[in-house]
Length: 474
Image 1 (cartoon, rainbow, N blue to C red):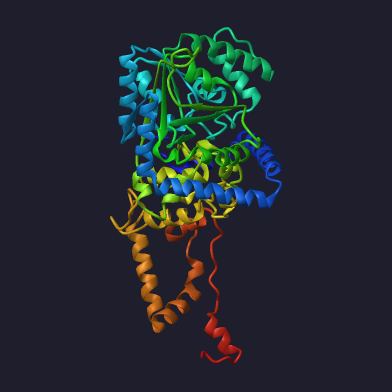
Image 2 (image 1 turned 90 degrees about the horizontal axis):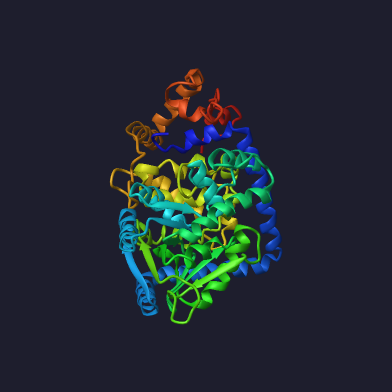
């Protein structure tokens, strides 16, 4: 689609029977695993309270913690770079690679690099970029965006992946054996690990007091991306900072149990410096790119600031009745689902993605499972109001983009009608006689009846019915 539109994407996804089956099976399993990990409800709520407190405290002190992180990273030998926009971040990464004369690099999983569209940018500059996470590698083969922030290829079943690998990888025969599919990918990736000039990763948590970068993964490819190449570049949104090292274990416990139903992931990496004298492995240099890209604007608004508490677990997606039926690609955004509905419009602007806050039933399921208690529904309502606010009347980027003159006039008329008893009574009697003759498929009711039954106007007003029963108006 030339223009992102959640309504159109959702309509297309709902008609894809195979897609809905793939998601239903996957989401059921994820919800069951999470529930098993949090069998003790009291312990869960205590941990959520702690996680919310840690993230809120970090955001409240974010400017000074970022300075502390920079200073400690530099003392440890990590080179720190600041990027105000995604374009700045791409340019910084390219400059680092050019100085190292790097022509090939391997990437660990990173949602920030997806936000920057880093792969496309580097490939346009002649630098070969290979995703080393298995799910991201499959997505790269298919030339698709991730469908989920934790499991990017969750929308495809084994047969679809087998067909893709047979078509895209030379010399590969069709097989639906998962072990064989992993072996095929492993062979391709290992060759690249040996030859890569540089590696790129994301950052799950950055510890200000120690200058430590924490990475969470299950496959080991992250360590190959950060340790095997001579140059390691970590890209990170500025909100990922935590104050103390002791803040990490509670957040890690919440992240892994909420995301995949695991008590801990296979690998937890803590990077505090490049290779030191006498060490047997590690990169010769480590770079940290800190990306703002609109986050400072979110931080400045106390009502919107909780958006930045997110630890990217994906639990809100797994429990969302909308996401589980239409999948991630319907949102046409790097981060889909409930968290994407509040984050993407704030980063890109309501004039660009003002459609996303309206892709929710406001059922509150996302709020109930969020490990750091982000008030997603409250923020959705705020964004909806901002999208329809008078021009330049809101604080969110692109506020007022969805405001329409006809709708504004209709509400003005509604206000005038209810301000006068005589007008209200007269129009009520008129609608009782003529309202049901209004067509539902065209005209002012078309948008309403696209997803709802056409309303029927009562033959008599409430006042008329009470008078008939002898009940006085007073």
